[in-house]
Image 1 (cartoon, rainbow over the protein chains, first blue to last red):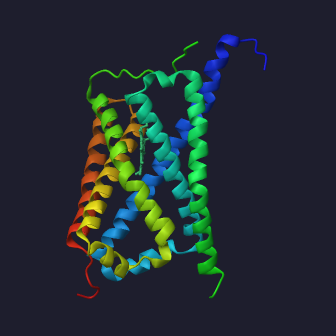
Image 2 (tube, each protein chain N blue to C red; image 1 turned 180 degrees about the horizontal axis):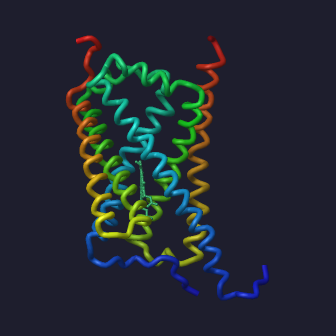
Image 3 (tube, protein in one colour; image 1 turned 90 degrees about the vertical axis):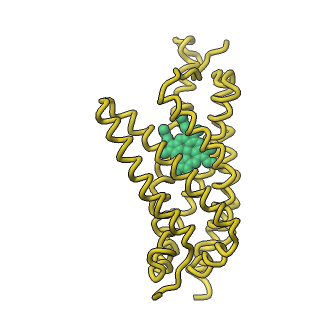
Length: 136
Length: 127
Ligand code: HEM
C-alpha cells in the first residue's frame, strides 16, 4: 500500500499489532486472575468447609461455566505463550524487538495459542455434549 | 532498517525489581500451569472432580508439593500483574503505596487460606 508517510508506516504497523498483543495479554491476565481468586477459595473448602465443596464444583458443571472454561483455557495458552515470548525477548534477545521480527512473533504466538487450544476445546466441547445432552 | 519497538534497559529501582519478578515467576510457572490446566480441565474434566478426587490426588505428597508451588507462583505473579496494571492509572505516591499494601494483604490472606488447605488436606464432612 502506497503511503504518503513512508517513514511512519513501520511504527504504526507495529503499534497496531503490538497493541493488540499487549491488550490481549492484559485482558487474559486479569481474567485468569479473577478466576484464580475464586478457584483458590473454592479449593480451600476441602479443608474449611468440606460439606460445601461438591456443591461449589456443581456450579462449574453448568453449561455457561463449561463454555467459560473453554475460553479460560485459551486465555492461559495465549497469555502463557505470549509471556514466554516477552521474557525471551526482554531477557535474552532484546534485538528481536526489532519491528519485523516483533510483528511476526505476534502472529506466531496467536497461531500457536489457537493450534494448541483447538484439541483441548474439542475435548471440552465434547464433554459438554456428553454430560448435558446424552445419556441423561 | 532496525527500528526497535521496545527498549529493554530499565533503571535500577524498585520497579525494576517488580519487573524482574514478573519474569522469574513467569518462567517458573510454565512448568506448573500448563500441566495443571491440561490435566484438570481437559483430561480429567470438571464432572470427575469432587472431594474424593482431591483426597486421592493429595494422598501423594508430590502432588501436594506441586499444587503448593502452583499456588504460590501463579497467585504471586497475578497479584504483581494486577499491581502493574493499577500503576498505569494511579500516579500519586500515597495512592501507589496504598495499592501495594492492599494487594499485599489480600495476597497474604488468600495465599494463607490456600496453603492451609493444601497442608491440612481434605477433611471429611460433618467431622
Ligand atoms: C505460563 C504462564 C505465564 C507466563 C509465562 C506469564 C508471563 C507474563 C509476563 C512476562 C508478564 C509481563 C508483561 C509485560 O510486562 O509486558 C505478565 C503479566 C501479567 N500476568 Fe502473566 N504469565 C503467566 C501466567 C499468568 C497467570 C496464571 C495469571 C493470573 C493469575 C497471570 C496474570 C498476569 C497479569 C494480571 C499481568 C499484568 C498484565 C499487564 O501489565 O498488562 N499470568 N505475565
